[in-house]
Length: 241
Image 1 (cartoon, one colour):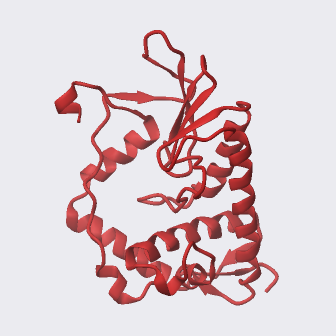
Image 2 (cartoon, rainbow, N blue to C red):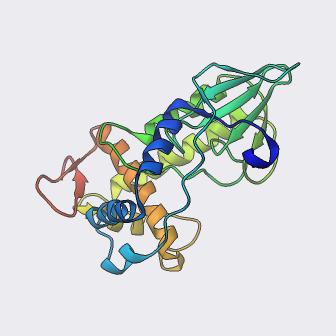
């Protein structure tokens, strides 16, 4: 699209850093990394061969930071850093019209995928990032949302509050099943999705496991669960078990 239109691509510096890393990985290295993550999550062996690497995104022409104004003549469009779906996800706030391009951060009917980031680091908590970012867009007041999926809708703040409550409920339910140690894969199979675990394709099960991992990390950060030491694949259990 850039080549055909002459347009420029802007991206938050955190996602630009991730894209550079992704583009530096070869196909074999990427698959080995993904396979190792799935193995440590407790996925069955056959799952490790499923799925192909998507083409990495284009490297951006412009790197953004939180609060930057976008060069849009006659309008006031501001970048709002909202990590969660990706470490550098941004919403774009059209301040002169109280409209928010919410991307994959706030959607009207479904909840965005919040999983462990590609090339994960243990010091990052994507779900906590996401919940904090929901509060951030809610603080903008009542805005019309223009999302990356589904439809335009009113009152971003109200929907952000609903999504936050959804994840808090999910955390409570997940903590309740961890009286016994579980792998990430086993935990994902016990969580609620938009269809039964048995009906999810291998790719969707992998995405569900990534989301389960993000919820487990949030519970671990809050001090409600712990990972068992020197266990492979990794297992988590409630702190009082």
